[in-house]
Length: 109
Image 1 (cartoon, rainbow, N blue to C red):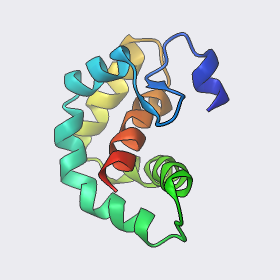
Image 2 (image 1 turned 90 degrees about the vertical axis):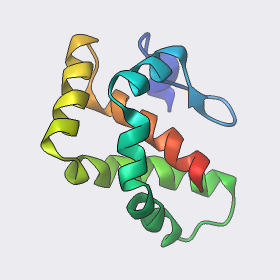
Image 3 (image 1 turned 120 degrees about the vertical axis):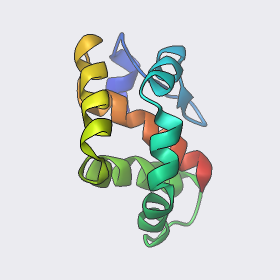
Image 4 (image 1 turned 180 degrees about the horizontal axis):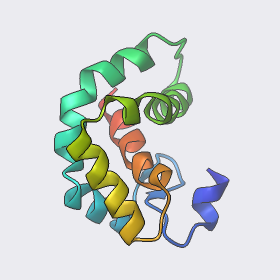
């Protein structure tokens, strides 16, 4: 999360609770993030719920961990290309775009 505090192109705001920046919202809309998330929501939630979550902090950290570890391998080719293209055109790394889904996952649990 320290990286997100110093990143000039940050997609998430690091405060409690973590939320999307205006850039994060713009990217989410451009890549159809809500649609992508809806498609994989149940599987991602299952991964989080299988962990030993006890409080809001655990939900937050596990949500970002699950997205980082599992989402890219779930995406179909079109979704993956959209995410990579958006990262490329904005001069970001894919992980910056993927962080958007961590926020969406956290808020859905």
